[in-house]
Image (tube, rainbow, N blue to C red; front, side, top):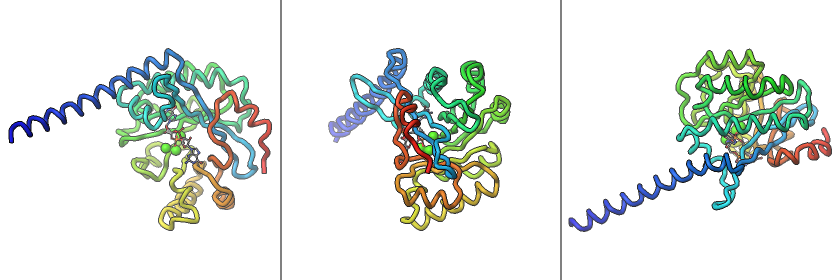
Length: 274
Ligand code: C2E
Ligand code: CA
Ligand code: CA
Ligand code: CA
């Protein structure tokens, strides 16, 4: 009896140790990777539902680690959030965006969207970063902050929201309709933009329940006069359905996959509105 119990506890202890060590080393690797220029900012075009033209880009982080290859943001962002490393990553995205600004359209109707984790959004730090890094560089194009959350958002700091508004920054709720992205944020954040999660776009024409949610979010956004972005548009059917329903902006592989920022001007030059 005893040796088995001992063996088991040793084994679980070992597994826990291994997992922790792995986590620690990955978070260390994030900090190191930032200085070693292993991170890149990619972008995915946003398509105007009316004209079919490109009306902006969402910036998406990419990490190529020479030891482990490409590590997806769904893996390293949650980790960075837990290790308080998300603010340096957001600053990196902002600095890259500012660096690329001269090569992006300078129009009032062209927007750059960045993802900000709820944990970072909650603090004044995001306002300070934007004021320091973004504002001096560019009143144009417009900036959208997409509020991403993995854990339930504590309390939204109204001060942060109103200071962002003063800076002319638009606030979007990402992954709307899923998990923690609940209806109560419509009131506390009074968002400018809702991003319908790709799971609901995928449901169009296939899944009755989720397709009903898609319909509800479309009417909700229209009634409240909130700009709606449908993400994860992969097929012509989804695109035409969403456009017929008057969805403002579309985003997905059907139009363009995420690409390095360097590749965007060439993509834009050959993209035709339809
Ligand atoms: P998200 O903000 O919901 O971003 C959209 C994700 O959907 C991206 O995954 C994008 O590549 C993917 N996607 C775009 N079009 C399609 C499509 O048609 N079909 C499908 N199946 N997927 C599509 P990605 O780049 O792997 O990013 C995953 C998540 O990581 C993001 O989800 C976002 O929450 C987070 N993330 C990425 N970059 C950043 C960042 O700079 N800061 C923070 N805080 N989070 C980030
Ligand atoms: Ca997003
Ligand atoms: Ca999303
Ligand atoms: Ca997501």
